[in-house]
Length: 450
Figure 1 (spheres, rainbow, N blue to C red):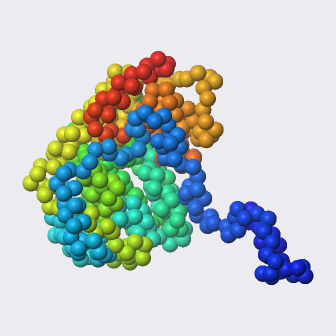
Figure 2: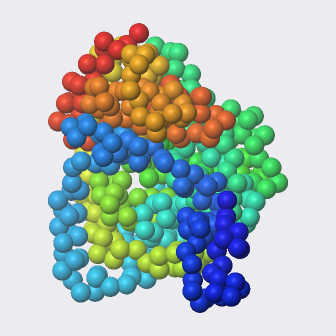
Figure 3: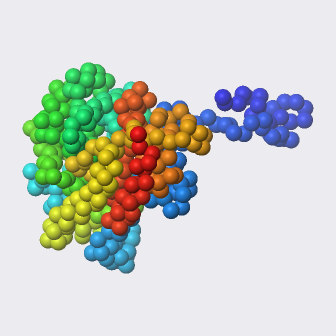
């Protein structure tokens, strides 16, 4: 509760309020109350990342919870970064739209994929990572207070606060898993399109589509995207297509870009990430591709939020995109990640545990409902009341087996968290040696399975 005026106003010796003989405030913990949207957007809550970080886990615990790589970017991309740092011009401000060389490189790669001759001045926006572009600048540019944004659950956790901070109202539509088959895959997480249609109201402004999906690994099918597109057209909605894992698709699955569907270019913003593409997540370089009607107001927001993105690393990302085809980088990357995926999922097969075989991205969801532990196991107080998996299984596996994961219930609203509470997310964006070590440790889980 905020302090009262009598609590915070200083007094003078004659008993009146003033600034002489200032006495200490009774309670200085909340002199100026913060905005309620921080609470509504879960910004102040202790999140899953801070609880399952290296400080709280054993020092030798293998971190498969967070989606960062433990291997470097390609040498030729790192060399380009070094050259850019050694060049005067690339150490200063870039245009808020992004460096021209990078925008030209994005056009070269993505123009054919989208079937368009992209306009580098009006249809491409470089951002400080996909988060800033996807989540904040577009929402700042388009959301009015009370506008609703539909997101499919489980959802990337940064969507929620970015919607709320910009006055929006999140509306949740869960993917429904059916993992009863002999070999369940990420494609078995289905959209109930009647449920999606009911979620749309006169206040709906936007739908977020994340394909390939984090954390499920689902690659949305053409049929699914066509149904989403039809609803967007019917209700005049913007579609934010978060495609930061677009080149990481397995098993000959087709990655369909919703912006290429009939009538969808004019209402779609496609999101990309140099960090995901080149294993350089700390570089914070991303981009948006959209019609001028979306890019122009988004540029205005970007300019006021960050002004411009990191200049030398934009230059390095440009070099990466320019050489990506001639070096055969994408095919090699998929091959390497396929080996990583197999290394981890083989460990789950050996344990006889059910998991959702991912067809895209670098995450796999493991059913942890069969994991049991001693009744008096000493769980920390910070885990209380956050769902079965968060409360017990993920922490127990990390502490007793030495491999950390992230509880999937954290990617849901409170109403729907039971849908995901049986699953843990494991990231396989690690080198093969690390994954082999994790796979060996995970076999120690067998004695805790029922």
